[in-house]
Amino acid sequence: MYILTVNCGSSSLKLDVIDTQTQQSVTELKAERLPEERDITLNGKTLTYSGELLFPYILTFCLEAVKKDLADKTISGIGHRVVHGGDKYYQPVLIDEQVAKTIEDLIDLAPLHNPANLSGIKAAQQVFPNLPNIAVFDTAFHQTLPSRAKHYAIDKEISKKYNIKRYGFHGTSHQYVAQKAADFLQQDIKNLRILSCHLGNGASICAIEFGRSIEVSLGMTTMEGLVMGTRSGDVDPGIVTFLQQKENWTYEQVETFLNKKSGLAGMSGFGNDMRDILQQAENGNEDARLAIQVFTHRLTKYIGAYAAVMSGVDVLLFTAGIGENSPEIRNRVCRGLEFLGIMLDDDKNKSAKLSDELDVANISDENSRVKILAIRTDEQLAIALEAQKIIEEKNKVNCIPKIPIAISARHIHLTRETVDVLFGKDYELTEYKPLSQPGQYAANETVNIVGKKNKIENVRILGPLRPKDQVEISKTDEFFLGVDAPIRESGHLDGTPGITLIGPKGTVILKEGVIIALRHIHMHPSDAELFGVKDHDIVSVEVDDEDRPLTFKNVVIRVSDKFKLEMHIDTDEGNAAEIKSGEEGVLMSCKQSVSLLAKNV
Image (cartoon, rainbow, N blue to C red; front, side, top):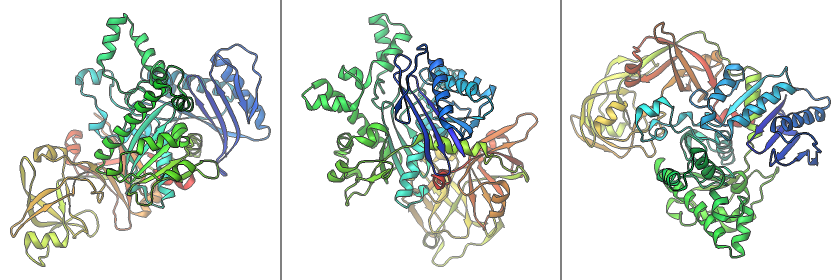
């Protein structure tokens, strides 16, 4: 299948026709410094454009040139990079009038990018009128951000009125390179804590915990976070009102200043290309040196913060233009991070030359606990593969049968050793009642759990015994107990808080093990085949209610021959949705897991 990918920026255009079977580009067009200049190349050759220097005309010219170059090759569809999808989209979608309108409605949140993305969509529809167009959103990967990372500390009514929250960007790239890292290390991404540094003219860092984005430096717009080519990144909000007062600037002038006249370009005074800035710094330019220092200091600070958020890091990766090609920047960023187990090998770092043949380079010292990688990102390929899935209707699932929903109350899984301490050596749990999942049961035995603030008595133990102690609570319990429990899949306990368990015969102080369970669906392999999903796919589930239909997003699929079909949500979610155990939901859509994408990549 041949897929045309359209990456339409505010001043640049990249078109690729990708053969998804070979995963190679068969036609490539690049246009820079639009619309002021006619800098257009097709497969390495310069094109002559003599029309008006207006963005829509140039787009049409470029698309027509690609169409002509294809000759006998037939395109099956067009995948568009769309920067902002808001809360609406957490997976690629087929573009129709409503989708296009939503992208337009989000222009206020991405004023530099969404208008250009829309222009690319309209031009592609004009040149290829009979082909499906698919939007692949930069924000989609970050839909898994927990509430604590998503919200700003502002008035809740204003926040709700204007949908002010952190959305994150560069998601397609972060997702792609994270899986490349896992594949290179021959590790399951579900077991890795990854810091992905996307460093180009736009820059961001993403904390990827066990395959899910849980923090990202870019926020509601593309201006937050790291120092970028022309964007300031983090600034004191008081600077905005200060400049409006002192310079008598409008909000448009302030936005232009922070978006287009700041960052590396603003600090260095002569441009946003890191290669030029490094050369100027080497020549003694103090402004260039300061720009580099601020750029690397900001990123180093974020690495430390995000490592703390994940309670550690297993992989640090660098990607995009600067991240892939600048050993000096990588060195400056890693310097002083030995306390986190991040140790760079200078020789490997300097000699790492990424190419089509070498798309991942290990640049970590042999004694480094954290693997440090330089990885070539390929957003075009990722977009093409996502578009292919939509075109082949791989995301459509069988909605029969409906999925029973169970409310999971607080409970505890214990090891043999812990039961011995709490109830006496070789004590055997006794069954109170069987649970819906085969072989599992609620025990008669309960224990008291004691947090920093309060305790909860008579918390039931579930059997059989497990290899790890695990305490599953709700958010209400979390605040009552005074613990800071992350939302995790069962079994992922690294960096989780501990708690005290009190039984009739003894007390156990757990160093870790308290989680809020991620909403999930248990499936037998036969169920997974029927629904067209695989282990660790992310789905949405709709509960049909005449008065108030509900949709649960970001529900993880868990497949085992020991499971019976059932969706689990915790008591807080059940109470908020007014759902009781026994109600049913319908599987509406599927976002294939990162690991599945990697098998194609």
